[in-house]
Length: 289
Image 1 (cartoon, rainbow, N blue to C red):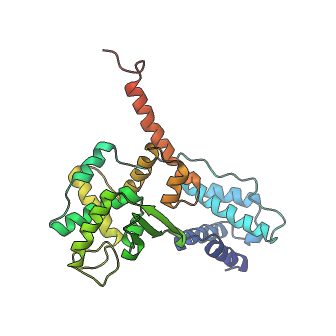
Image 2 (cartoon, rainbow, N blue to C red):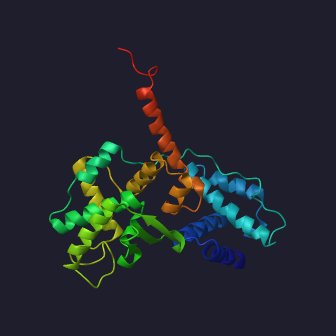
Image 3 (cartoon, one colour):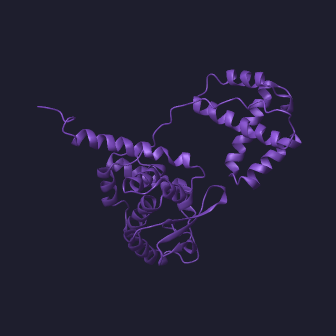
C-alpha cells in the first residue's frame, strides 16, 4: 500500500473519528479505483475519473455517489498535504439520486406495538417491552442497545450515556413510563444474573445480540402483520420528536448524526404527514359526495 494511502486511512480513523467499517469502505473504493485505472494514484487525471464512472454504469446511483465521495475526500486530502499540484476531482459533483424515505410506524401501528405482549413468560414480556420502549424513547441503534450497560443509565435523570459510531459519546433520554418499565425489568433481572453488566440479557443471563433483538422484533411484527425492524423504530422516534415540535438540532444530537443533512430526511416524512392532514381537513380538498 502506498504511503499516502496509509496516511489517509490514519487521518480518517484518528482525526475524523470514522468507524472501522466506514474506513474499510473508503479503502475498498480506492482500491477498486486503482485496479480499474491501473496506474499510480498520484498520476490520476480527470479523464481517469470519467473512465471509472463509466465502469460503474451498471451500479446504483447511490453506490456511484458513495464511491465518488470516497475519491473526493482522498484527493482533497492529498491536495491539502501538497502531494498534488491540482485536485483531479475538484470539478466533479456527486451523482444525484433520490433518497428513499425511511420506514416508520403510524400512530395506530405504534399503539398496537406498545400494547402487544411478546414473550412466553414474565421476564421475556417485560424485557421485550423495555426493548421497544428504549427504541421509541431514545432513538438507539440496535448495536447501541445490545451494548448498553447498567453503568450507562442514570435512573434519576432519565438519561443514557451512549457510545455511538466512531466511538463518540452522546446522551439520550427516556420517559417516566420507560423508567417504570426499566425498574421492573431490573428487579426481575437480578433473579437471573448479577455479574453481567449488560442491560438486555437472555433467559440464560447472557448479553442479547443485535441479531437476537432483530429476531424478536421480526416475530412481533409478524404477529401484528407489520414489518418491524430496529431502524424503523429509530426512524419512528425521530419522526415523533419532530412532529411534537422538536428541532432538527435536537434530533441530530440525540440520534448521534455527524451531519445535519442526514437528519433532514425526517423533515420530508413530517411534510408527507402534514400534507395528508391538509388534504383530509381543508374544506376545498375534501371529496364531494
